[in-house]
Each structure stands twice: as C-alpha cells, then as structure tokens.
Length: 119
Length: 113
Image (cartoon, rainbow over all chains, first blue to last red; front, side, top):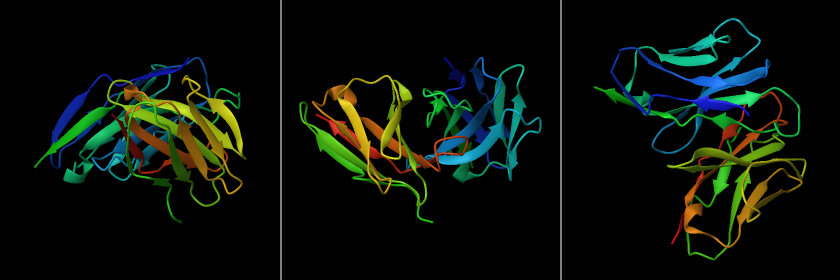
C-alpha cells in the first residue's frame, strides 16, 4: 500500500521570503502522480501543483515549484516570495496511474503542514 | 465553468440519526470521489463513483454509502450516526477518474451530538 508522509506539522516564513515544505512517499509503482493541495481556513481544497512521475523536469507554477526526487521518493514544495495569502494547510497527495479497481478516483494524502506567513 | 458544489455546508445531527450529503461535479466531469477529513485521521478516501457505479471503496463501515445519478451528481449517506462521524466531508470531481486532476468542493461540515 502506498503511504505519504509530511514530517513538518507546522512551518512559518516571513513575508517575501522562501519556504520549503517536505513530503516523502512510499510506493512500489513506477507510474503515478503527485500533487500539492492548499487548504485555507475556508476549507476549500485548492490544487497548487501537479507532477507526473515519468517526467524528469520539476513542475513549476508561478511562485510555486517542486523538487521531485523519484529515487529518493521525495516531493518537496518551494514557495518563493511568500505572501500573506499563502497561509494555509498544505497537503501532499499521491495518485496511482494504474487502472486497477483499487486505484480509480483515489488520492492518498499526507497529514498536512500548516504554513504561517508573518508580516 | 462553475466549480464543484456541495450542500448543505453545515449540518448538526444527533447520534443514531442518518444524514445525506450532496455533491454536484464540474460540468462534464463524470467521476466523483468522497473524502472524510478529521483532525485525528486526516483525509481518508471513502468511495468513488463513475457512470452511476461505485468503482472504488475505502475502508469504512457499511453505514457509509453513496450513489450517483445520471447527471453525475452524487450523494453520500451515513446511517446510524456516531460521534466519531463528525468531520468535514469533501467531494472531488474529475473527468473520468483516471490520470486527470481532481477538483474539490467546499465541503460539508457535519457535527454529531
């Protein structure tokens, strides 16, 4: 079974600075997807960034980028030029690319990291 | 396009009652997944529906059930509510539940007294 681990329950960063959130995962599969979702106090889960495991290039989305290390099963999120609106809980999630019946529509989440942004 | 909508947003029930939550996916999306979020257990997958059929199910008791209608709207039902069922219930939709991204609704917060 696949697992996702976020070892940092809480992080804080000064506004305009850079912060990195860590995520490790365990899987025996070679084809999968990894995601970072953001959940602000409103509780709406918002997609931040997505990475396909078969792609060597790290995904980027404006101020958000990932460091995907497939061999190490590591998937960290870097937020540059942090803004007050970035304060939220961040979840790392795994999705199998297999079409097996136990995989469809299922995301496996880490426990989350609460990010505080200080003005 | 309108996003995923969930109704109601908040619900208070007492132990032993049953509850039905509704989820309308993004237009054109045919896969709907449900998740339970609690402080202790985090986000856990409940089940996924596609074309009115349950395709995948998480490790939850039979008190948790769901269905999907021909317009892809989905409902989940929890019978004989327990205090531990208090949680945020999130639904997410995607085109066919395969490799594409899931988009989440705002959730329904259920409190069981």
